[in-house]
Amino acid sequence: MNVFTIKDLENLSGIKAHTIRIWEQRYNFLKPCRTESNIRYYCSEELKTILNISLLNKYGYKISHIDKMSEQELRSKIISLTDTEARQERLVNELIAHMIDLNVERLEQVLDKYVLMYGIDRAITQIIFPFLHRIGILWITNHIQPAQEHLVSNIIRQKLVVGIEGAMPVRQVERTLLLFLPEGEHHELGLLYVHYLLRSHGVKVLYLGADMPLKDVEFVCKYKRPDFLYTHLTGIAGNFSLEKFISQVSQRVPDIPLVISGQLARAHSKKVPSGINFKRSLSEVLEFVASLG
Image (cartoon, rainbow, N blue to C red; front, top):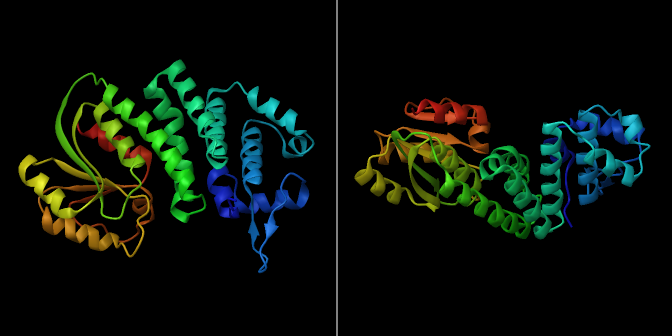
């Protein structure tokens, strides 16, 4: 059984933990369990409930009104939302629910239907990336089972690869980036999304993938001379030190700038050395890709 903290609910729904606590006191739709030390925790059904309620609340329904709805009425109201962003957010919530339930068939059906209707490019941008962004924190904190992560990752990976292979940029950019994840980092989906963005923009990509020793990165740099190194750090097990990693890259490949995005980049607060570029949000990543030409 999945167990979620109030912080997980906040990250996934966008509703502040303080507000969730108030709703628990005033309304009946959330009933968290508590540990022996009186710490709240939530089950899968409560996570799905807060996702649905936060969506309706965001698009104009009062909480006091939502609290009186039956489960069937709640679902009906969500399906009836006509705003484009609301529909996209509803689909992202469905993907999260299917992942939690291990319903990989329904998850893939949601993706395939969207791809069929709008194309792989819009599917990646409008629902796959938002889905990855919202569930990334669960992967880092181990609040979903490894089996759930691997099943979903493999499906999403297939869609991203289709998008990468089918990318048809308007023009080619005379820049080359080498993409890799350091040893111990196996969360590849963020890097594949960056690969998709670069290919769509016409940038040449050397893709090394996950769990890559720096000696191999150095070897490729020696012969291919990319303009940038790029890595996307989600969460590395063990005693990984970002400062040590940066230092080692700078020593092995001193003349090629390194770009770092992902959860570890967002959390980094120390001074950034020369030649190292942190991209702490999707907008910064998109600006960087656009700046390449």
